[in-house]
Image: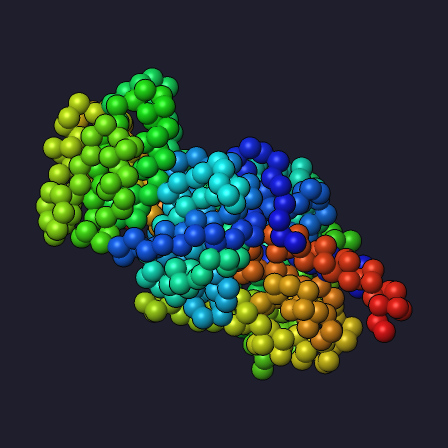
Length: 284
Length: 273
């Protein structure tokens, strides 16, 4: 486990609501110590549309990729203080329509008390629909990471979240790591579409084999780059597949829709397994 | 295990319960479930979300009744209309099936402080929460008039039982197969006109819209339980957008599962719903 990357279980961006919704299901210890990646924030609020935003498909969920969020100001005023009070390790996911916006977000978040790290949203299933800076080219993704890294303290992690594009993920991971990303998160939603033709991201177990392929590729090609895996993690077995493939941590997303206690349970189960694995009797 | 006892008296719990009875009622299936902690926390208008094996999204179900004690301990009854793969699975399970659910979820109907005249309108399976609501209102000395409506007789919920829960009962079916012919929307004005202070409604959006509009015309308060598909039910996924107008007259999109399902009828932006 890399000391600089939080883990081993994190809440994936956009899948833990504002954080408050999870509190009722967090167990007796509450959310203390939970690594929580916020929904992707933009400088200005993005209103939610009234179109259906989430739809079920066999093996997973489709979701709208347009990043509705309350904007940075509102987040700093309400959601962040609540998360900090609850003892959450807050990793803020940032998204911008220009490189300058990413840098602005990083600068302002670097001064906000309680921000443990940043996750740079670089792997939208549809950059155009999401209205974010086009980062299909690894060079562009790396430029964004460099811009964020310049504004954010060096002692706090910056994670680069890449799309699970098997043909380019190694290239993207290498570029982002060289640009200063502490780790890469592999396994954003897979580009998809709603039945009515709107752009969507596909998450959940259906996306897991795609994410695994990408995690394996990055872990094999770039052993020095810490990889956080995301896609279909719902129990110890599904998390372990990624950890054995070389990931240092996993993010839990759609599984929380199915069972809001997933992340609490998984933290406890992995900790218990970690203890038992250190006991040689257990492996016999 | 996933179970835990919630701290707050109304905080939802996520538990594994068991199906202890299942019976067909027309087009619906009535399921009786044990769900430790849920019946105790239930208030009329709240709902439960069931995790269906093999499906990521969950199925939200109205609670029809809770029993404080039975041979199985506290139980709750839900009404399921088998329409998709999840509800069909749930409706076809035998007694003894473990059912993982979260509840009670959402905001319940607000009860009046004084004994006032209430009109309750329930359409289809969404009439389920009207029965426990009628009981709570009667305990407070309110005069309760209940309207149970449905497209046809097979989708009419417990009309017989309705007569035990309310002072007056009106049965409406769109095809006229039983009771009066027409929808609750057709008769909304006439129903609300009968000296009603508060209107409570649950059902499809067109019914709620008509009832809320009639309430406004006649100077009554309205509370409607809006049914928007809720993929998680817990507020996490932000997948159940409900367009409303805030107290400050600003248009907003809230989550039907946490800021609802019960909202003031005059606050919903029906034209964009």
